[in-house]
Length: 365
Image 1 (tube, one colour):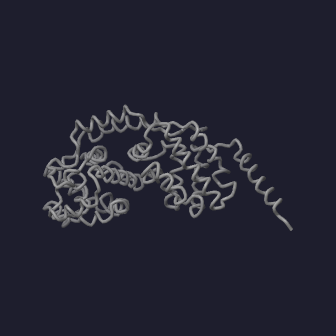
Image 2: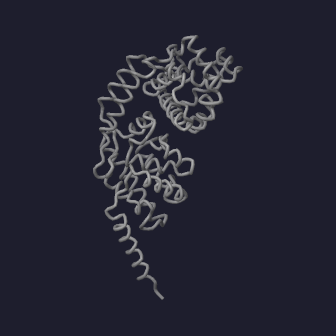
Image 3: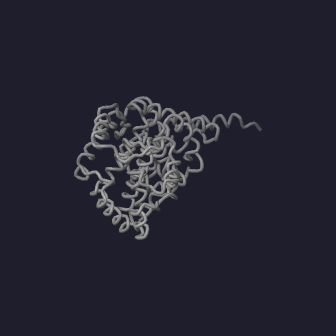
């Protein structure tokens, strides 16, 4: 017998089912039950359509490093991560409702990959085109869970009309306010001996919680391989912290804020080899802050003494404006990597006034 006619009929029925079933249906990204259903589909499909290896390369070619922002610290995204489908789940949510991304620094980083508001359309179009190409090659069929849930229809709407300028501007404004209000405007002084002693004690007392390198280390090693092997260095305060049990985190934090403190010189050269250019310290500090905030949410650390000391604000300064090019060129950097107040303020103002991404986050998109 010849089953060609039957095969064509089945394909036609599947196409009609996809058009009718999700027919008119648009995924509600704010409905908890719908999100749970999408999460389960991302988990069960992680070896097929939800495997980021299919979509990731195309996205990274146009929006470099954006995938490093996912999964975020949102509770559902963290739950999906534990189940094994976090990256695709959070990426899909970001394209439909970027405002869900937490903490706000991670959202800001993700939105910065989109240069202007309507460029979000290019991101979603690229995702859809790559997905459809893989659908044919991998034989996923005409109806995947994303079709049935109405996710593809929602994505198509974003690809046509999406604009995240308002959200980007709002995020920049929120960060500027937080910078002005947070830590009472205080920025940690990495050159003050008493402040360093206080940070040392916090790293020692927090070595089983926030200062445990197991929380931050894996994310840093993935992007800056072997850098953590350089800490603690032989600087007297770092050696003292090592003896007390908090040396690695103490020296790591000092390095981000003042990389020139690392001793001896040969050790400093080793750690600087992990950086290709001066402003890459911004990515390093940003990765630390992002991972720290994710872990803060996951482990319920709340407000810590290091927040009150202005350590996180100093790290944010480096993430926004840091540059260690002088050190890479063999020149001294007595001021460290934390930019002065005036530079940070200019950066905040410039960001708040620029074009800003805010992906579609409405209920019935």
